[in-house]
Image 1 (cartoon, rainbow, N blue to C red):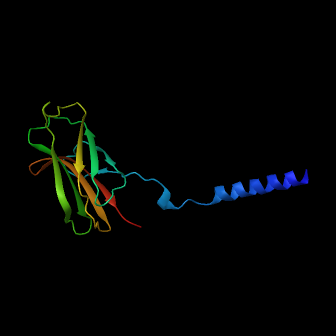
Image 2 (image 1 turned 120 degrees about the vertical axis):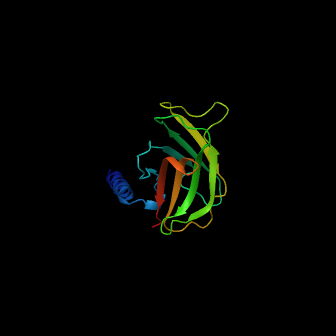
Image 3 (image 1 turned 90 degrees about the vertical axis):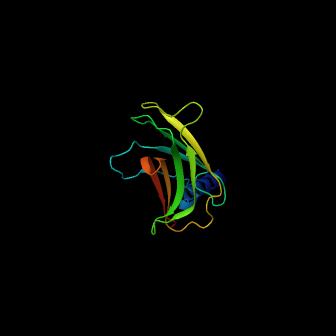
Length: 153
């Protein structure tokens, strides 16, 4: 009986110690959060999911963008993705584009659309801090955009 009591006491003490140990923050899965760009007039918000998340340098990153616009998207509009240096504002690597219009036509007002873009060869040396910028643009006009800032700790 005494051995059982000691065994249960040691087991409970061990479990409480293990539960009290903090998990290092590096092991916690954090998703990339995109914020709407500050632009006037305020464009519609973009919902963006990236895969893999977080970004892996040198690999292909898939951006899935969804939104609903108040107006029809004109022909010639592109989904644009690039990496930028937060401090200097310089573009890092290439600017990748995908046309918003396809064989089914262009996205219509009031109807949610989803567009996917594969960004191959994510830049190897990303500075600290850096940004990921996603925009829907026609020529130099920004119809909508979102930004995800990254700071390494």
